[in-house]
Image 1 (cartoon, helix red, strand yellow):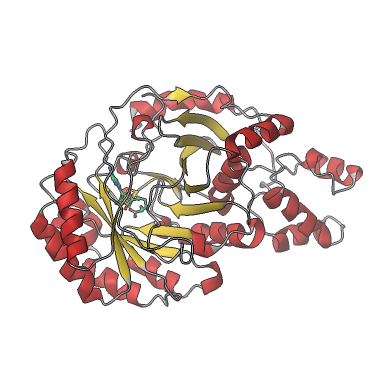
Image 2 (tube, rainbow, N blue to C red):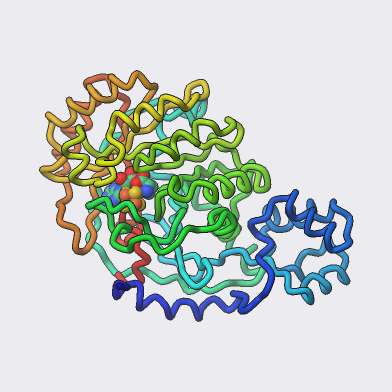
Length: 426
Ligand code: SAH
Ligand code: SF4
């Protein structure tokens, strides 16, 4: 049954004036340069037109075939007449947090998924090898800003804008951040049913396509004026969904981002709840398209983990760690263990000591990212007290485990970890 939040959101669909209706051909966005070349060749055009198309879609972020001026006008007209369309997922609605975080509802077919832009990041990537040379390893002191939820500010420009409008906004927005993290969704909803996660409440609605995964990035980059190669933007596949239960599309999305958009896989982190067959496939990926890996550990032992993450009954901690060992890490790369602190359930000092032993036993170059649980309606847990978070961090770090605390970002607009449920009200 649809949740009221989701039902009320259906009116958002009408905001997306650009969404093609009844177009017979699949969108071009989502095809790589090679597949685009094949399409062009089938259309009687030279194959190198595919490269031009890829450049227009993924580097220039053009949204309409008519805008692709590197193609002759008559070819553009013919492609449109034949029913081709770019079909990149568009930002249907945006919410801005008091801390600068922006949460977007991105149109994917008739549904929306959530993508979160965090200027200055949330410290989630600290110490995992990404920032080597740029930043020293450091332990982050807790800045447990606990925002009382307030009304989200609906941005006036949430509906699509023209290219000149985009350009002026890009200039404006870019001056406000030096680096950023973008949190990307891989599915509409999620089937994994972790007891503390709001996304789980949606159940799995559907898998996103490769184009819908990469499209979230290209659309937000265009909105924020991100220049690939110049700007330090990290991607985390930690939005809605379990990426390794949509493995093929997820990795195809990553390949588009690497090969066509030009992003480094070392600036990307995929988080999994511990889907062992997915981790084993991931271990076989070539290093030049493999993001870094984060495992949602979330508990000090199997008993507690099985209680809060039923998936642990299928693949327990040992099975997950064995699979992770198959991944050949790059120099300086670390595996991240994410750990959500639930008051009274996972946040005790004894738990911290157990986590330290567990992480040491893996023998992996690893770090732990602590996340203070973010509340959501109808979820029967409590936020950990700031003192408990700090005590946990100090204990774990004191045991020699590199430990970082993820800053809660955008709680006031339901943009923080585990709060992504397409909420349209405050
Ligand atoms: N499905 C994947 C990726 C998305 S969840 C996974 O579970 O790893 C991203 C992270 O948010 C996970 O580490 C998850 O444990 C965490 N999370 C989920 N709900 C949360 C909540 N309410 N508060 C804080 N973190 C949460
Ligand atoms: Fe799915 Fe991740 Fe939420 Fe678990 S924590 S329900 S795997 S999105």
